[in-house]
Image (cartoon, rainbow, N blue to C red; front, side):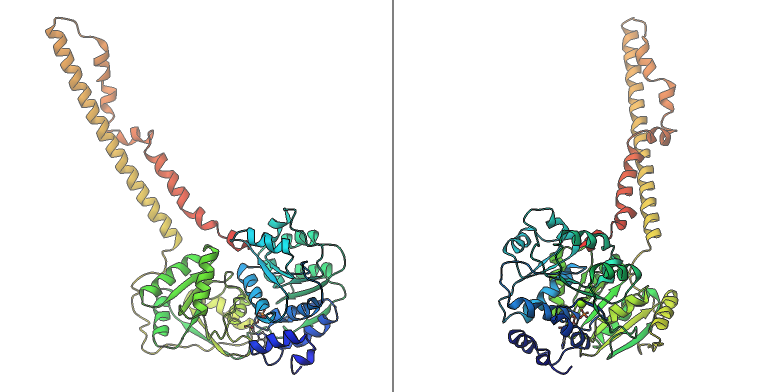
Length: 491
Ligand code: ADP
Ligand code: MG
């Protein structure tokens, strides 16, 4: 397929593509657009960065242009907010010369403007499943005129546990026959089953022939101890090897710590992960795109499918656990026509994961050592204190607090006892001066049982407010907070 005009797309779309500077369709576009223009269902497997967005948008927009406005006729389901926003951006770019309207519907932002999109009937709605279902509870959210449905990154939605949501969404859509375009990088059995359910005599395209990152990417491995990874990254950035880099870490915690270490080292860096608010993520991404940040540190899912034009470098700060994630991440560079480099930092403990990746891509990756970098240096700051150590530290501190509180309580009791005893004696003295016999209560108060409390003070205090109060916060702050990890991904 040599040109877009050979695909006989509407002239206003061709103008949009020309504005974008796209000379010709990518292979998946060349194969998917013609059958989709004929109204056929399409099932396509194609790797990240192959141009799937326009493979489904162009044929749908072409068909929508000549229809009346005012009803949502196309729905694109995609796993993350970032992808939804990005697809909307692609829509706006290519549809600029058409009367078509589009809106993105995802969580983390207000429902109001999205409700408006339903009420006005934007032509194309791009949604994450969770937020879409939230809207479906309201009477305004009807998609009765739907004619086109796209599933983008279906396997990713499966990984993220969205399959039940997708099925629920399907139940809300009108039952009349529609055109479905289904995109997935891989075809695990539950996804294959879903395609059976959703597609009608689909044209099947498989451009996933070899599991390998896009061509044009130089991949290299940097063996380095865990503790020196930050220093190595700083060294590579300061050498000027990487004008911009998207850096992946294994956890949100590591992303936070690494970003702040980079900033401390004088590098402009931001981070993006599931615990950050939508506006923080948008701001970080925009700043990275326009060059305000040299480095964007990300966890895998938050950055899934993020497209940063002409992104030269991806750094796997940690080795991805699944080979498939490696391919996805590395696919972030060298999209479509550009070239890029992907560096993976490998500590001795991560060699096994690396071997799995090399097996999956059927290639052993060159190992690079950086001249002038001191691989034997003692790290100045640890990237993270292991969780067990952190918990032990918190426990120790709590125990100390408790001991101190108990001691104090004991001291207070002892002082009170002494004071009581003194007063009782005084009273007694006064009473005997007055010639009256001494009476029980005072003596009882100062009795030996009470007097013994100070020495057994720990025991006495334990019944009180000390430890039970001390325990509650530590339980609240500790590991349980780390466990509340997944909800922000829910779109
Ligand atoms: P995928 O969804 O397959 O991961 P995208 O649709 O996000 O890939 O496209 C990847 C990148 O390629 C985007 O930056 C997009 O603008 C660019 N692109 C898409 N189609 C073309 C084309 N025909 N020519 C050049 N670049 C393209
Ligand atoms: Mg995509």
